[in-house]
Image (cartoon, rainbow, N blue to C red; front, side, top):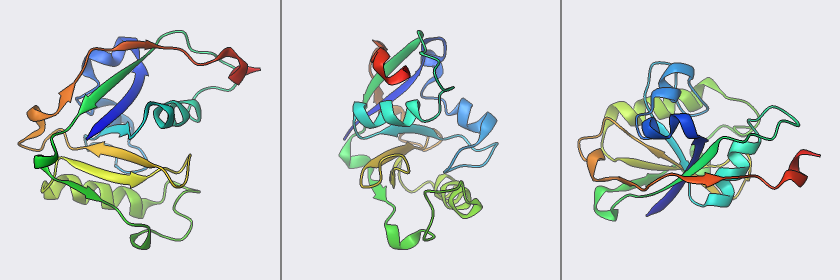
Length: 152
């Protein structure tokens, strides 16, 4: 399965470490828990990045990383009926507990989770402590630029 990730170019070398998520936590993980956030398309990765930017601040230092996870590693998918009704409106503690439990269980290296930014689309979590994580391929970083019209 192919995935994409957008990050600041200065952090690209550590994009597969889960360090940012460990330091700050996120929708699907608590602080202290490493996870790599990615998306199932470059377009979704762009939207996910855009909704987390400072308004009207066009970043000039972004890069995207394309990656591949072998299907043989196993990928889980979180279904909507496992989520609270308004899961996309807040960073509910139950979502972080779910992600933390998935990481600790360590059965798969990848987990598809629904996107809160584009409901109906899917993001992809990667478990950097999974024993088969070294089989996940991260390609060279390429420059990414948003269309300036998005910041008017």
